Length: 180
Image 1: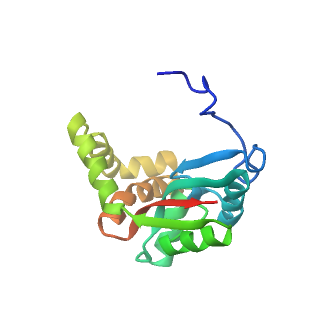
Image 2: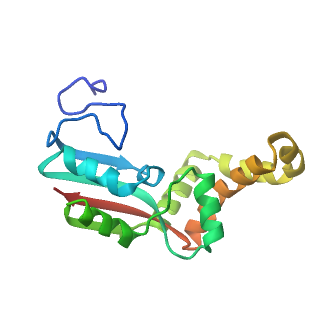
């Protein structure tokens, strides 16, 4: 197995997603996992992906999605806890991909599958870290609120709600693919 960047097919580049440091029509593939929801405005991000792709090039990404089942206040708290610009819906992403000039866009919801795979991987490793961490947070809530402050503690607890929201169908996880 070669080192990252040791061939002409893969490169790791640090840059601004709203001004991708690549020439127009220079890439065959733009691939991203669970990051688009952190970057506003999404239409500008998708237009940058479109700009750097060669004709026929593909954009493939996954992201956390709103299922439209959280009340607006809870959804905003969740977005704040995870530093998200805004949770998009599956249809919302498909619409944005079209607006950005992509063709053949497809998306699929896989929320419960991601959660099941995460839990299966934890159990295979004998890993109880997340369960123990949640228990520890709840047992030490008063002291942690004093140490961290109310906002920081509330933010951490909201981050942990993601699995409950996925399990209840209030959040989803999606995979997308489109071509230029």
